[in-house]
Image (cartoon, rainbow, N blue to C red; front, side, top):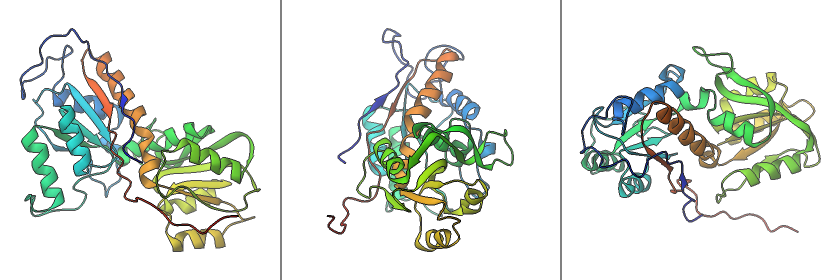
Amino acid sequence: MEGMEAVNTAVTDAGSGEEPEDGAAGTPGTGIPNLGQVLLAVEELWPESLAEEWDEVGLVAGRPAAAVSKIMFAVDPTLEAIDEAIEWGAGLLVTHHPLLLKGVTSVAATSAKGLAVHRLIESGTGLLTVHTNGDSAVGGVSDVLADAFGLENVVPLAPAAHGLPEEGIGRVGDLPELMTLGDFAARVFEVLPAVAGGVRVAGDKDGLVRRVAVCGGAGDSLFDAVRASHADVYVTADLRHHPASEAREAAVDSRPYLIDVSHFASEWLWLPAAAEALGNVLTDQGHEVEIRVATTNSDPWDFILTPAGD
């Protein structure tokens, strides 16, 4: 896939006049916000308290007083995504995945991560991570997946330790009516962005499914919760051989069936929804900002070879 179609959720007023100089503070409640004001809006939507203990979320680079008139959302803080944000003139890049999840002792530009930090700082572009807090919150990654697949009566697979009952990792819900596994897998394939790896399915193509568990990103740590939810099928990404094999061995009546999707694709769907949500909050607060979803496809695979079919 050569890039992705840009999603623009602009909420700017074209006649709003000149923007503040870089680093100038935004005016509370009016005009272009500063980064600190954007962070308050982000916290309202995706509280850092919802992040898993092992995770690293929040501001990675940027001055809170810097004016932010453009915000870009992306799945990964790759150099390509950073360059796209810089070229567009974004004052802030919001990514789902962290740039610096593990501790580092150097950000020299001799490494890819160091170069990323240099490009961000030298261009005056802030970087913000919304990771497992974006998974857990209402309207988060798995909520968007559940909605896209048409699920009803949706609840978390693993409720948040410090959140509302409807917050947590993963979601499980019901289809309005029974579907065959093959038809439901086709729906999953149609809904997600096209990537080289496609969609892998384990189970009887003609088997009937109604209760569906989902987890955007890598979800093989949730198999106990999936079984407890009595899901007929589990949709997630990065299913490794041993957890998937063991899940099939432990299946009751061959369920849950498994649908393995691209990590990138499963989380990309959240970006337009997140961009719209942040735009709405900032607009309600009287701010003028343009928000866009990056066109960068950061799925790491380029092509796949499969056995010839009939």
